[in-house]
Length: 138
Figure: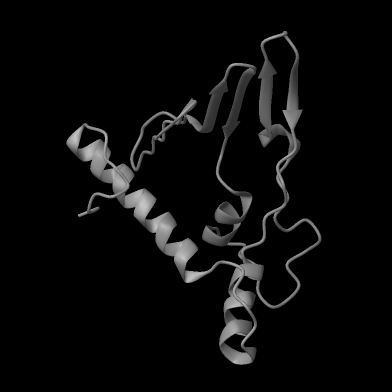
C-alpha cells in the first residue's frame, strides 16, 4: 500500500515450516516486532475452550513473554504490553443490533472496506503488481 509519505507492506502466509513474526513494522524512528497470534485463538481451538459465561479473569490477556518489542534508533528497546482482546463483545453487539436495534460498532461499510482491502492485497500478490483501490478485486 502506498500513501503520499508512507509505504506499507502486508505479507501473510498460510503454510510455513518455520515460525516467524506475526507483525513487523519499520519506520524512520525504529521498528516493532510481534510474534504469535491473538491469545484467544489458541484457547478457542484447544481442548480447554471455556464453556458458559465465566471465561476467567485472564481471558484475552497475553503473557509478557509474547508481548511485542519496540526498538528505537536511539538504541532504546522495550516490551509493549498487548492490549486485552475479547471477541465476545463484537458478537454481543451484533446480537443487540438484531434484537434491540442497538447501533453496530462495526458498520457493514467498514466490514466491506476491510474485505475489499484483503481481496485487493491478494490480487496484488497473485499478479505481482500494484493494484488501485478502484480496481475490481476479482
